[in-house]
Image 1 (tube, helix red, strand yellow):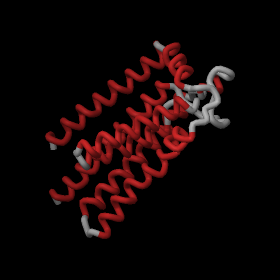
Image 2 (tube, helix red, strand yellow):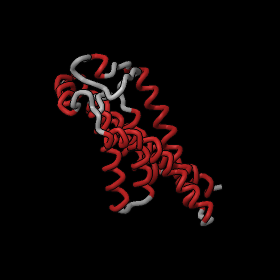
Image 3 (cartoon, one colour):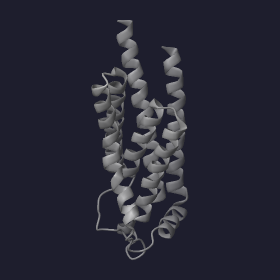
Image 4 (cartoon, one colour):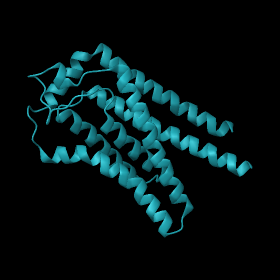
Length: 207
């Protein structure tokens, strides 16, 4: 059991350190955060590419577990079915954590706090920290990378997730620190779900 707990504790410490760093950036370097958001946001963003990228957080994140599950059923591969459940679990945990944090931090969106300086691609309200699109994309990318440790899977997955994060700033709906916080939540959720999954199957083997 210690062999499983020790790596998990290391990952949790890394996640906590990353999250604290994000909070430090938000609290101590707010001007940098706001200025970078203004620099990336072009003013009335119209790029179809970045709009498509931001929307891809939903259908790609949903498509990963669905594809794994369908492939596992067709090929009668129980490992793929477990990976599908794990990826879905990471997404559910990420959504719960992100929503709880949005309510707790209660941060206004940049366009609401800086009207006339940051321009959203469409009217949007709600809470800003962390970025839900970013946490969703990174939870799916991290979960897929944990299960398939191949560079040609991991690198594109993380590039896509980072692109989703960038699109949220470009489109004027999030600060850079929102995106960093979302990435930390997404990756942390994937590793937490992976650890819980290993504990569950380890327990079943013992019985």
